[in-house]
Amino acid sequence: MAETTHFGFEDIPLGEKQGRVDDVFHKVAGRYDLMNDLMSAGLHRLWKDVLVTMLRVPRNRAWRHLDVAGGTGDVAFRILKAGGSLTKVDVLDINASMLGVGAERAAARGFGDRIAFIEANAESLPLPAGHYDGYTIAFGIRNVPRIPLALQEAHRVLRRGGRFLCLEFAPVETPLLDRIYDAYSFHVIPPLGRLITGDGEPYRYLVESIRKFPRPGAFAEMIGAAGFANVTVRPMSGGIVNIHSGWKL
Image (cartoon, rainbow, N blue to C red; front, side, top):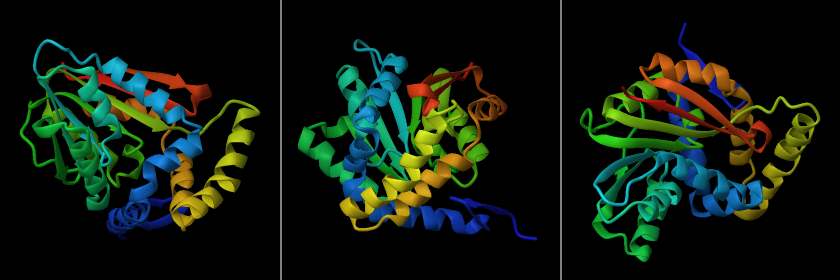
């Protein structure tokens, strides 16, 4: 029997997921960051700021960073601003439409050769081992068909002492907040997506994918199984999102 996985609440053959996820992000690329603002009431900006603060990018020495599933550049630009002139960021995404948006924004901001955009799969990075000081992935890991492979690749490309940080949504389990969150997710976000992008179905998938993502403790165990040490979870906004941290020692 062929291996299956989930696409939102739907079970599909594993080999089909990447193509369907790609289609979602081709549809929403142009309005992706705007929708993040609207869906989170701007909170995603705070969450990403905390992520970058935790990274502690130095201002007085070289820092090479990999931001995965970050095609529009939203996290990468923060890292470049936090670091000094020797900070360089490679933005990797499997979706060409998202990368196109990011490249245009980077050119407009004048980042020059401090940032590069790479179209590739998080499960098989075309990058050398031990190359990066830091690795981030924000709201992208739950869309990867084979999450353990992506975590192993993250570990491979980091240098010794390098840090892995993942910002991701989680199913909310706080009483009362869980009901409010579910009502908002399923009854407000897809119609809002339809209004802003002309298609609500990508956003129905995105909210369903949160419910299928492992609980924070289970995901932390997956990070540890990939080889990372000192794994921690930092919940924010009542556990709506978490920052997962690990070190390559």
